[in-house]
Length: 63
Image 1 (cartoon, rainbow, N blue to C red):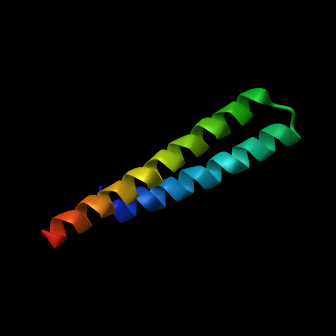
Image 2 (cartoon, one colour):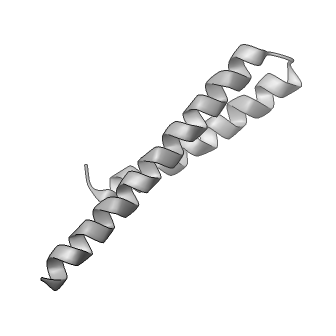
């Protein structure tokens, strides 16, 4: 997957995770809150991967 794809999927997962956390909190559903937190962290990791790919590509392009 491209770095842009990783970043876009990461943003989407982070957003969905935040929504799940909010719904879980509003409905007093700890399982949904936990799922949301996990999905948010997954999104953050995907974004970090995309940024790392960008950095590697820039380093290679300079060489």
